[in-house]
Amino acid sequence: MQTLSLPLRAALAACLLVLGASAQAQRFDAGRPANAGPEATDRLIVKYRSAGTSALPTAAAAARTENALRVAANRQGVSLGRLRDLANGAQVLRANRTLRHDEALALAASLRAGDPDIEYAEPDLRLQTLGVPNDSLYAQQWAWSDTTAGVRAPAAWDRSSGAGVVVAVVDTGVRPHADLKANLLAGYDFITDTAIAGDGNGRDADPSDPGDFTSAGQCGSGSAASTSSWHGTHVAGIVAAVANNASGVAGLAHGAKLLPLRVLGRCGGYTSDIADAITWAAGNAVTGLPTNTTPARVINLSLGGSGACGTTMQSAINAARAKGAVVVVAAGNSATDAASATPANCSGTIVVAATGKTGGKASYSNSGATVTLAAPGGDSGYGILSTLNAGSSTPGADSYAAYMGTSMATPVVAATAALMLASNATLTPDQVATLLKGSARAFPAACSGCGAGLVDANAAVAAAQGSTVTPTPTPTPVVSVLAVTDKEPNNSLGGAQAVASLPARVGGSIASTSDNDYFKLSLPAGAKLVATLTQGSSSAFSLAAYTASGALVVSASGSAGLTRQFTITNAGTSAAPLVLRVWRASGATGAYQLSLAL
Image (cartoon, rainbow, N blue to C red; front, side, top):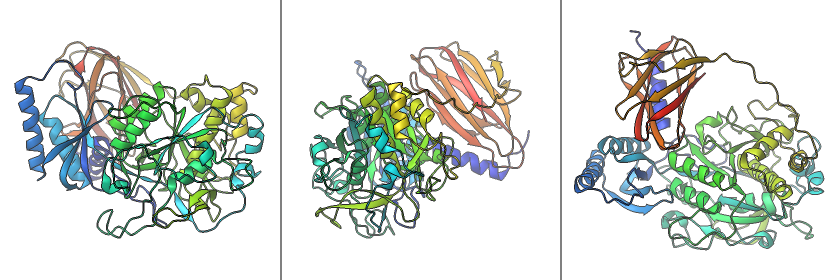
């Protein structure tokens, strides 16, 4: 048996933290990147498998659930109380004190271990805005028409203004700015915590931004004081500030309507609130809220944190996409791999990196394989001009300012999607993504890991109208994938079936409720393994990885019909043995596919 190197052990442990639940993002202050590390939380999201069933839990099951909650809480020295329900049937639990991220992860793991009825448990993350104010103001919106780095908006406006399309801005709320009011819909305030809300109450029908200013230490020990960002107002103006009104700026999709959904306040906002906002934005029901009569076809998420995409966030995105909503997400501002930022690493999203006035990658922008394409976000003194408010704390007069960030690049792409949908309302979210990538133009300057190219609003709208041929994408190199068929008996760690080489695709079947399939492989030094498990819509299969000695590396709990995925990196200098296990968590037995990619 090969002994795992210390670097590999550290990498595997770190991977487990990422997959168990996402870390928190620090506030993006000037001079410090966002997503720099975890923050604390006082909440967990827990979903029970029996939630939503008509049958009442037995007395034994109820006692087991209560005992699991008590034991897990006692281990972390806290008490837990039920706060509210989520749209997907999960519950938000609140602790009586703030937990460090590692404590929250341990609490979630303890809950899962103590109650088999738990489908998943994860920390309720607090995500943050991703924009950086820039002191310089600019008299023109270079991002729209600059011949080098612009998105060719004037030509796109000859084709579409975005009329008839609703774009949801899930953010800090929106001020009733004179350059926005004509395009603002009613919206909603989704913040449940009054300390974060800053408006004196919880959820209500007023999504206007009261200001997200903070005092020193308010967002955690050592946190700096900050003035109000008016972040959502700035994002909204990029999408749909009123045009042809002889004042201010013009939004890229100035004919579209804006649905302001307030989820971020002082010190950010919780994933549970953001997930409900995404759900409601698309027209799905959220308990206790009125029906959204103006569902959004595009949802803009200029926010984020570090870590893996949680089940709660992914479920909300899936539900929105099922309603036809295009979900556009900021890649993040840490100048690192966007795969480490959430919700940029959630599947089904259009992930946007930022470029500067040269058309090359902005110095702060995240990049990598998860990025879909890039758009102007500003850099080196050239920001993105948009609507703002002059108040340093509470609201003041209407104003304009230039900000920089992937938060600014994201609404450029969201607005382009609105222009496309106004031209062709039948497009699905996947078709919008495909046309955006196919119509993107080559970067005029270096932008490694920035996706398919720089967004071209004119070409994208033309593609949506079918008046141009989508350019042929760069051919993907042919990679030999080993086909593996599940062979019994492989029901134990010691009897694991060998996978001779990677990448590989395993076709298997869980024949009974007690069946387990084990597969052993060797992960090369420096390699990254992406394991993806898919199964039938009525089956909930789980996936886990172990060291050769049987120590758990990471586990992804099963959920009916949903894909389970995790990534493991071997940071060591020698190959390391791993064993993967597939088993039934709930639902039907049957076939599955396990993809093992490098």
